[in-house]
Amino acid sequence: MPAPMVIANWKMNGSLIGNASLLHQILSGSDAFEHLEVGICPPFPYLEQVSEQVSHSRINLGAQNVSAFQSGAYTGETSAAMLKDLGCRYVLLGHSERRQLFQESDHQVAAKFEAALSAGLQPVLCIGETLEQRQREETGRVVSTQIQSVIDHVGIQGFTNAVIAYEPVWAIGTGQTATPEQAQEVHAHIRQLLTGYDASIASQVHILYGGSVNAANARSLFSQKDIDGGLVGGASLKPNDFLDICRSAS
Ligand code: 13P
Image (cartoon, rainbow, N blue to C red; front, side, top):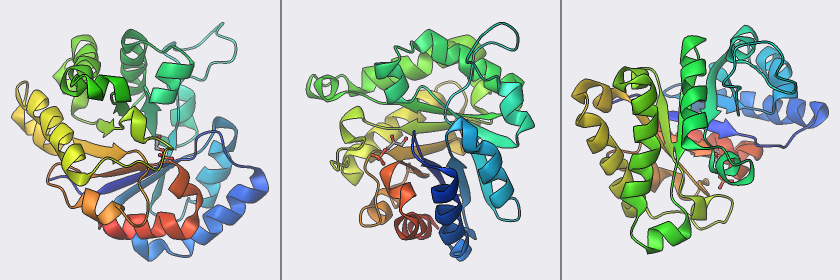
């Protein structure tokens, strides 16, 4: 079983002053990270600030997006090599906000996954169904398709050093968390899919749950067999809540 992992996704929130205070408070409770792998994914402009402030802690750095291209005339893009250069360990890929608001396709997500791997970053592949898809009982098919397109692009070996985050779209930022049983069912499905390709990779890959994780529900979610931790949005901006979530994972 992989060691537990909690990753904070700050989304498009923060400021130099606010981040410094948030990080200071998080670092003052760093006993919470002793038995887990922890990461923070701030917006691009704050990567260096966070990197410096967490440099003597166990907190790893991640980014929220990356270009599929390597370098050159791609105005506004940020390459995987640049993220690596800044000390990133992870990069979130295919978050539902990017899929829905910026029309990122499975194909683009797979290309970004490949770019991340070739720069030595650990991709955190975000997948999940909408409410309509769940109501039509398409959850299994949707998450399988999202994973399959990455496997088709980079092969199952690409998951040797990757993380999967199951984030049901209807649970993100809504306060409507999936029940531990609902989440476990999908996590087991994901692991089963990977097992069909490579049992050893499937047993080692982190499968995180995301979607309205908070200090009150984290423990029951993380106690499920196939839930290896969480990807946390809103609650990661509240230091005490984030620390409590980390403690719930270890
Ligand atoms: P919330 O925790 O705010 O629901 O966000 C989840 C998420 O999208 C993390 O990537």
